[in-house]
Image (cartoon, rainbow, N blue to C red; front, side, top):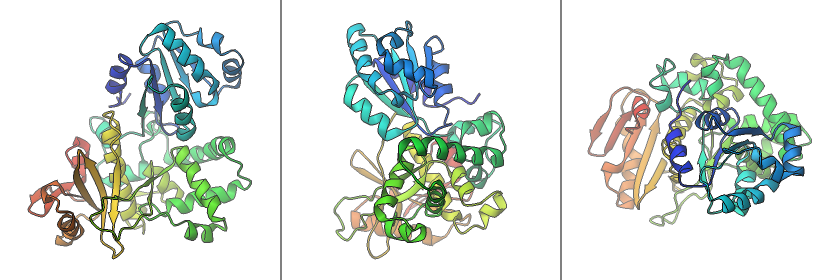
Length: 387
């Protein structure tokens, strides 16, 4: 079994907080992680109708099952439990008493913030990172191997064929999560919407353009994007807003939590197809931004990520703001170093009066260098967290 870097953070938090919540996409390994970290705890999965009915109809008796502690999977299906959990942990004063997991982020976090504020440590478990795969036999030989495969644990742990895993994942997601979360009358149209979104990774979320392509109203397109976010399929990267240049783009950019799923939705089935596909650069960008996100989240840090773009076309793919310092990143899928790689970083650093030493190019090649205009890092260094 591949170890998860988030494990130690959860163990530490369980010594200090009464409730731990772990959210993330379906099949990201939440259940395996929680049961592995707390093997003596009583386990309950609220996707099971009988278990869910028990939790809703008799919450006090339901919670008495966990004498040593309790892992409650898909806890958002019984939000009534949260008030009872609050009363229970306030009474006992025990830390690490309840472990809650969920795959519907907005619903889950809304209920937690209402009932368990100040009593819960929140973590997000995403699919495997390159750092987690590096010490295993699954270490990828090229970035495109990983981009095509993605990081869902079942693919690696059970060596499931991609052409079996992803069709099943999409079908299950549409039939279960979509129907539960929102009234979507035409599921085929929703799947078309999802595929169109996959084709727009790394682009601005243009409601008007997507509406025209799908025949949806703009409010429906916006609501359906929210659904993709709620169920950890897609997310948006907000623009960096520091006011050193007033002519800034304010529309968020769209990315998928797993590039393997995005590739499947785009009809990409082999590395060779990926390497010549029009979306290759965007998917490489998506992959790098995901890895930066995982780097922070696997260390228990919810570090905000941004992109920057002005209305004249200058753009920086990623900006990480840490302690008031700006760390801008440009992401290039090309394998050959070019001086043009540094063009937008140099422009950004000049108008922002930013130190070039804080700038990084992550690209598809093998050589890493430190230059006066910024640092050049091979995609392989992501596996060491040395970007």
